Length: 125
Image (tube, rainbow, N blue to C red):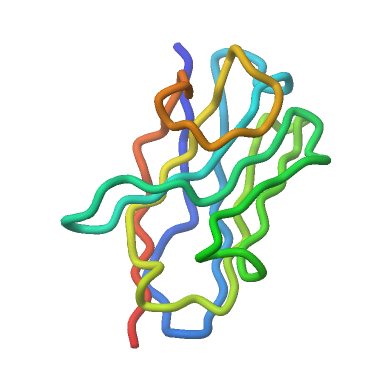
């Protein structure tokens, strides 16, 4: 069974840091583009960051650029999202996603094949 499992969410204060992990199982994801999306209450899901198969190409939403860093460890079948200088507007459920058909990073949610169950990040002011 193919699964993506996020972890590392929690309740933090403004300005704090947090690292999310997404562990993949059931197949090898080393050739997949991976991404993080988030969804805040009452809002649509939005793109956060994406990384290509090798980890050498990354893209970020303007709202997180300079504060968040996406990375991956293909040996561990895991992708990470390091979040710093967190703001209350970063509060959301964060989802990781894998595209089994594309190796290059992209932000098109509809093209991602596998999704995790999400992890809650809450930033208090």
